[in-house]
Length: 131
Image 1: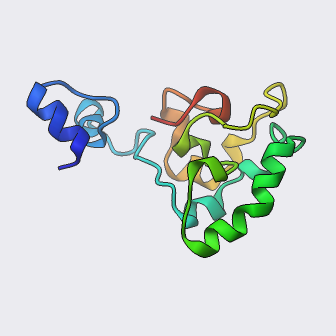
Image 2 (image 1 turned 135 degrees about the horizontal axis):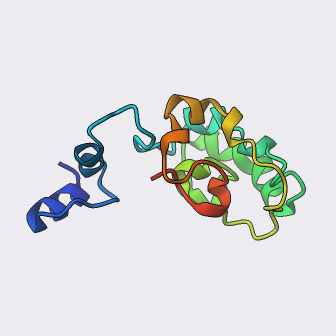
């Protein structure tokens, strides 16, 4: 039992942060939002680094340049990853261009986790994580 579920179980409420409660609420695992983990595998499959929203961002480009070091060390810090916003939430870089076309729908993670069914469907960098 994860810590979020223990807290919501004890208070007899369903929490948005708890994946166990999410499944109880939605009764279907094919709905968006199995918790997308910040893993090396997911970072490598992520298309955020190719997204027009952040291609002109100096902040994102510097993070992309450093990402191989983070992956080699197996230490993934949200502040160092210029992507996987469906997992980590809104972009920390302030110079992304949110008026550009989003490509979330082309990402293999978007397809695998059926993110089109979630509350946040695209622009995770602007609107936050998938759940």
